[in-house]
Image 1: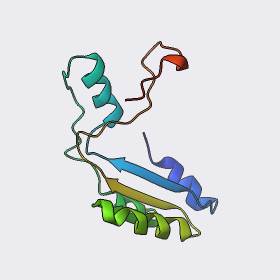
Image 2: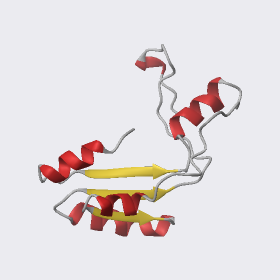
Image 3: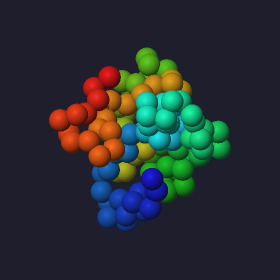
Image 4: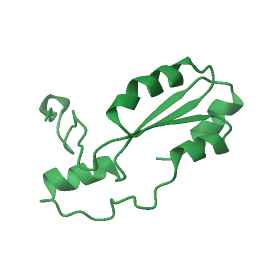
Length: 114
């Protein structure tokens, strides 16, 4: 969870596309706390999260945002058409979970699908 690789992408002229599913939480940490720690949430709210579009611009690359579902397709098309690094920030519901996931210490055959 850092951004230094964007500097490498810029320096090496790599057309890397970064897609952020942004629910304003440390999403996987929060999801683990929900599923395995009885919803005892600690230190996962990112109410001071950066503006990822401005962060992209600080690196001199394209930053795009989709705040509504109807904006997703246009942002993807534009982001994939740019021949330089792009950061695409997709705002998602704060309670949205990400699957599949594998619980700690479990084999891949025990991944959670929903």
